[in-house]
Length: 405
Picture 1 (cartoon, rainbow, N blue to C red):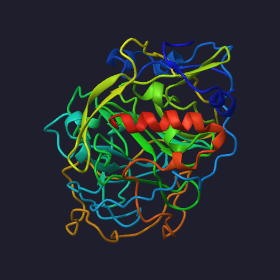
Picture 2: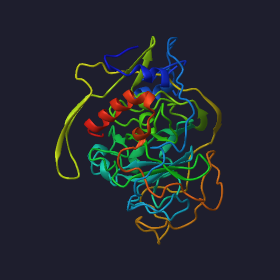
Picture 3: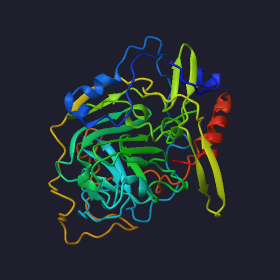
């Protein structure tokens, strides 16, 4: 399937693409569709696609430029990801961790006075465990969750009643990422870590879509000349939603985690030997740090909008858990009188890190790679191989000329 999109350099076809398989429907299904069939989400993404080449991406490098964060850690965050911090349901910490099916965080509104789209720059972290001095997601909020680890990223896909973490009922949500309209991040001071490589790492590129009943969160943990982290975590397609941008298992029942193949980068489509890229159409203005106003245009008003993801990556080595629980009943319950708003400095409490299968690995989080976080744009493009220079030029121009959504 080829949409009316601008073609990428042929070098990208050689470097990025070749593989099997299926595709996914657009995010935000009607509520009756979600309830109709527990397999609805998965089945509706799949369709025969005999001409879809397998996505190949060389050897991912966890130390490739633009993977590990180089920016500062947010001022309300602990110095490192830490488990068993005091529960503080009014915390303003903005350090999210994505480790396993039962150890992850999402960003969400501080209160329910406004929809997410109005407060993206000042959202806070909510976690499934007491960690990072963040707020804790109450028991019963998450009704299903699926976690995958791939060579390029880790990803959580979940359903639940997120009005319990201050989403307004019916709020179709938005997208959080380390860039934002001012390139300071959404939220400003937001940082993301994972320990799936065996140690806690602050990562540069990530994206978090969430509405009142559904979320997905991808953290890019490796990259190379073929697929920099900023490409696999492309953040400017926020209106397309989870199933297109982060395809995977969107069954709205069960809790599991799996190894998986990596998905094609968001917006990349290959068919009949041709590669195209979709750019979400948007125009507007943004103001830089010096107060200067810039206009921008993304995409083309006459282009077609895809309704399917390129493929659904296959998965293996799955394990299930019965549920996600932490003993916290609601956002109003605070279990420690010593709890206080998260602020700069070391986090209180134990530092047990969770391994990729959800078990506690040790009583200490160990050394953390990068003391900072992902604020501002990725440096990945600076180290791209000259064999992909034409693609990098296109990518850099798009980032420079767009409002970073």
